[in-house]
Length: 209
Image 1 (cartoon, rainbow, N blue to C red):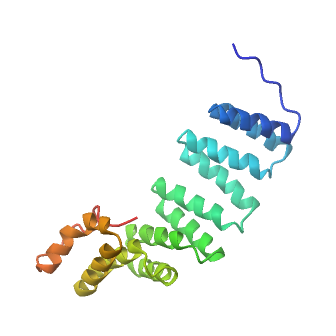
Image 2 (cartoon, rainbow, N blue to C red; image 1 turned 30 degrees about the horizontal axis):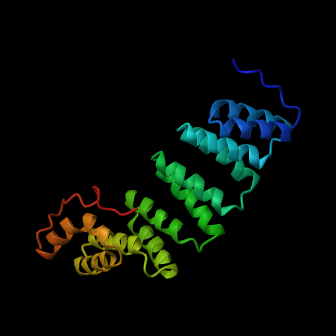
């Protein structure tokens, strides 16, 4: 039988007890302690971060985003927080919110290659082709050898029926990362043989992320 845990008498004590519970994987109890700590200090970054982490461990993406929203309000200039928020929205299939959060993170810190790649993938999913190409180009400006960006640029060219550019970009992407051939081979063969149907479901499983 567990000994009763004494009520914390301050923010630091609550955080210490919460972290101890979190280490023991008692996540719901840890969240309760973090929230008690917030009663002493509603802007405690460590408490909100702990709540995010525990909810992710529990698979509660929605609750994790709500905690991240509080962190963003506390520190709206943190590109990392905006990126984390964007990524979680995308995992929950909330693409519009995810795109908005990623854009804000990139406005603050525009030289994050992976974030541009992720934004481009999300924009492709929303069929925002021109904006996706813009995000891809920004990624390639920062890293000309980004295989994912070259491949997704090929997908965008495919949408606009620019087959020559699509083949060129896809082949270059595969030369950088041969594993992308798994995504590219089928439609590349069809394009080369001029057998690509107008209604070919090219987005069904071929976009790189």
